[in-house]
Amino acid sequence: MAQKGKRRLRRMIWAAAALACLVAAVAGWALWDRSHTYDTSVPGDVLISSDGRTLTTPAIWTGCEDRPRLVAHESTHTVSLALERKRHSSVPKNAACIGGGGDDERLLTATLSQPLGARTLSDAVSHDIITPFEASRLDRPRYLPKGYALSDRPLGPGDVTKPPYQRTRVPAWTVTYLRNPGQGGDTGSLSISQITGRLPDGPGTPVSVHGHPGHLKHGPLDEQSLTWYVDGCTIDVEARDRLLSGDELVKVADQLSP
Image 1: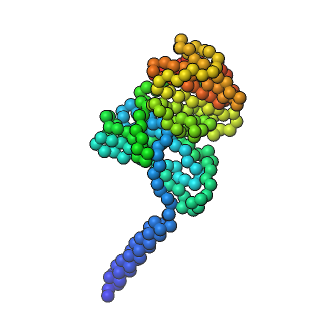
Image 2: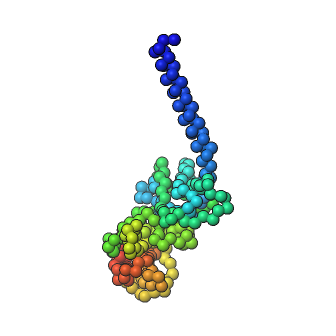
C-alpha cells in the first residue's frame, strides 16, 4: 500500500475511534443522569401579557431540585400549564429537602405560539380552570423609596401558604420590589398586589388614597400594609422594611397609576 494510502487509513481509524468514544460518552451520560423529571400543578397566580402570548407564574423549589420550567401545552381550543420539575439523581427518595439557599423562588414564564385569545387556560395536572390576571390592568408605581428596584422574586419574605404561591379564587397578581438586594446591609421588600373584586375592610388606621378610603396596618416585625379598593380591584401595598415609614408607604400608594 502506498504511503499516502496508509496515512489516509490511519486518519479513518482515528476518526472512527473518536466517533465511538463520543457515542460511548453520550450513552454513558444518559445512563448516569438518572434525575427524576415530573410535572406538578401550577398552584400560584398567573399573569398574561398584553399581547396574550406570555404567561407568568411564581414558583418555589427546594435544594434537591433544579429550577423548574413552566410548560404550556397548546391545542386549538385549550392551553394547559404545568411545572416541569427535575429532582437530583443523587438525592434519596425519602430525603428531607429544604430551600435552595435563597435562589429557590422566582417568576417563571412560558411563551405561547399564538395568543391565548378565547382558548381555555387550565392546569395540566389538577385540570382546574385558570383565569389569569391581565398585565394591561396592572398599576405601576411612579414613586419608589431610594434603593428599591423591580425583582423577579415573587415576594420578599416568601410565604407558600398565601398568594401569589397559592392562587386566589379570582384573578390577582403581585409585583415585588426589593431594596439593596444582594448588597448587604439594610434590605427591604415592597409588594403591590391587585385582587379582582372588593375584599372586606380589615383593621388599621383609616387613610385616604387618591380620595378612596384605605386602611394602614402595622405589624410587630417592621411589616406594614395599606389596602384600598378602586376600579374593580382591591389593592394591597405591603412592606417589610425597618427604614420605611408609614408616610412613605402612603406616598407609594398615592402615586400608583395604570
